[in-house]
Image (cartoon, rainbow, N blue to C red; front, side, top):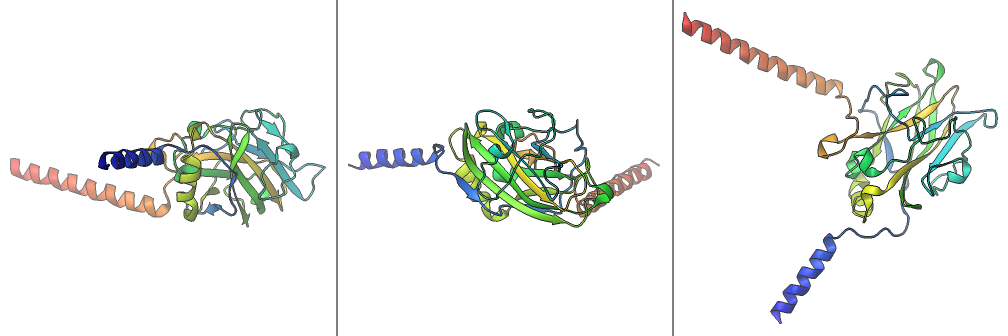
Length: 262
């Protein structure tokens, strides 16, 4: 009897470790938050592929909105706005409409996103005079094949867009309160490495453009391949203090060696 109980317990514990198949749509409203402490550089066009680029046009004078989906390949426009967390309208995507420097539907594996803590989105606004802009919605969508499997959105009003496109401190990450849940529900799902990422975005109070979004791996040391964030000023200060301390110890060691040889 004990042998059967041990075998059953082993089977159950082993089954719990097997990645679970994708199921119902997983949603996290407000789960993407702006992190003012993170900066990244060298994010201009030609350097880093975009997930989505939007720009206002004559048909939309108050908002600019764009959507990409991975359903049946890369798709654009209002028909691609299949996220349910915000009523994005789509339609303002600058040409060329292709999976290139302006748009993308990479896999989680291609982005180096191995855990929820890796996920980062870099917002590159391009406003004349560093004018303000409001991100009414940014929705990160994750697809299992043609099926929208998970969605996470957020918003943020920027009083200024300085330092501008190509060198941005405008990084969105996942709220700490949902990290464990996303790890379980998304990264713990069967085949999650091949899940694809797409975006929806609506902005207002803009005066120029285009605005674009790129992916960043916020924890590149865990096997990801994204762009690491630039250290904060306080971190640089600690690093410089450390370098100074090491340099002083080396100089002291050389002086002591010189005295001993005299």
